[in-house]
Amino acid sequence: MTTPASPRPTSRRARPEKALLILEDGTVLRGSAYGARGSRLGEVVFTTGMTGYQETLSDPSYAGQIVVQTAPHIGNTGANAEDMESRKVWVRGYAVRDASRIASSYRAEQTLDELLIGSDIVGISDIDTRMLTRRLRETGSLRGGIFSGDALASPEEQLLAQVREQPEMSGASFVEEVTIAQPVVLEPEGEVRATIAAVDLGIKSAAPRSMLARGLRVHLLPATTSLEDLLALAPDAVFFSNGPGDPAAATAQVELLRGALDADLPFFGICFGNQLLGRALGFDTFKLKYGHRGINQPVQDRETGQVAITAHNHGFAVDVPLEGEHIAPYDGGRYGRVKVSHVGLNDDVVEGLRCLDRPAFSVQYHPEAAGGPHDASPLFDRLAELAIAHRAASASKES
Image (cartoon, rainbow, N blue to C red; front, side, top):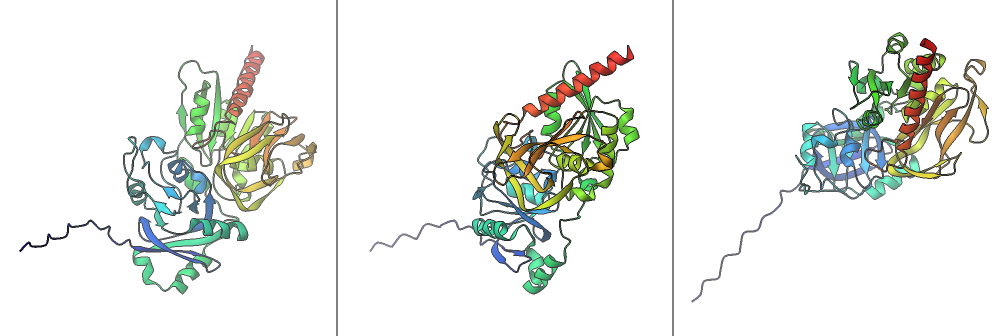
């Protein structure tokens, strides 16, 4: 008599730990714990990038926010030190649909889950991110919270109360949280063609790299730098980076920018820097319904008609009429004429400003494109040209 063979053992995945994502409107999404365990509160926003999740996580412009990835499968290439765009992961929380169980890239040094745990970022997976994105598009960005581990011991009603008690993003300031503590000088390889004073409002590493590649020495400065200290560097141009929070709360940085304009220094600002140029010129800023976050946003240069696909991460915009030239309203027109140089083709949001009587310009998107397309990288060529011209003019005056 033949004895039946014993069934082969099968490997079973451990049942995932539970996690909740709760929105201020009472919506509750039930999923699996991902990354660190605990609770995190923040503004819930979505990003449409299909790639570059590590650059997203390490973008300081996401400080204070819970980021939802609309791409369904996240984490398959793992994480590595080279792709970090700043010194740490800045998102408050992270929400994905399908979290990869393994890292399949030869460049991976750890899994994405390990990066989140090591960075103490509370996340959630196995949720319907498409439904969540539709909700945020309909209602606008909402305050929310991710809860897992011991945080789930509290009733859902108490967790919802925590979500609703947190501050709004309007009026919030994160600049001093994300900026560097001390100035840093970055030298290009070869000849130094000009010097840039780059004010770190939440800068990504790709921006200084873009300047260094053009022969520009970069003085990377804290956001709290005084005008006196900035001018003491005798820069050939000033750069204001991207960054998080409400531009209306960055009054000290607006005054610093006005000082640079008064010194007739060339200026280039991106993202948050664009919003601060608008406020320095006397225009208002406003909060967008759900913002622009992703690497596929079409923007048109209104002078040339050229359309670029660009990387975005902003929840605020500058309020300037799209048509015609305008006298900048600050101090009776002190800075002369300005016009909208770029516009977003999805919703006609102002995507760039150009001063006509000052050597100053800005764009709302990220021309350094990490991650994202490189259509807009020539904007750094324009910064280099202005800085080099200023350097030559200064040398001519001295001689």
